[in-house]
Length: 319
Image 1 (spheres, rainbow, N blue to C red):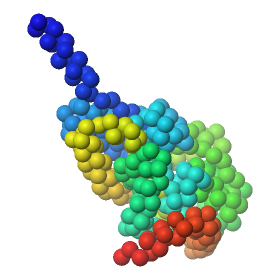
Image 2 (image 1 turned 60 degrees about the vertical axis):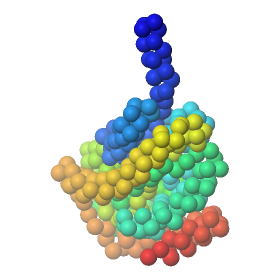
Image 3 (image 1 turned 180 degrees about the vertical axis):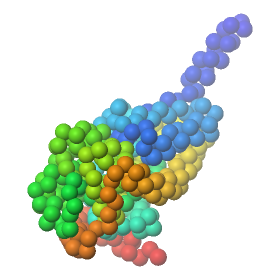
Image 4 (image 1 turned 120 degrees about the vertical axis):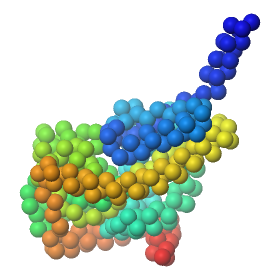
């Protein structure tokens, strides 16, 4: 009887434990992934081991463009995506990829507060919840040679990782090449690309300094990663577990925004130590890139329609 009881208890415990997968596209050492790992540990602790979340880093479970569909279809219960990767699907996802619309952490938070209600509605229609979002540090231009204006980028092989970065390439006359984060180091080593726009974080993670020596700190935009949850998987959890998951998500968001700001300074210092020239953009380059931003904002507003106007109006109204 004792043996039977022990087996029954173990079986009940196993049934009570729920296991989720959380794919993401970035290395385990990246601050977004470290934040996800802390989030998973917080959920484990808060639920007494009832909900176990496994973080699959560096596109090891699904490639970056596949993660949203995997969560939507239930192949993964959660996933982290770069929102602007999905701007062709729905323009609002790409609001934080419009150059110079929100070019600081405060402006980025204002934009997120305006963007979030619209995204929650859209994702809800697609069977998902938006758990939290965290920005990357401000984006600058990595390039192999010194530049003074956008004209100096003409013909340069330019990494495009979403529709916005591809459009920037078109507007400055660069040659866009689609390369996702996991393939970036190899693309630089083999000469597939010679320039791209990203944060100090990506530059350090991919050892860009081994191939490219100039980074212009344009602070063009702060793209966000968002963590999505499959709604059916969430609904299947008991109420205390749901509450613990939402609380851990809110904590991860607050922690992630602070981490992003802290890491921005750290990564720039690390790039300098490894031989990267960190430069303020020359006046002509700033003017040229602002024009690119203005053009892209107008194009985005036409594409985004009523939702876009609602978002930009809400963003401009916020104190």
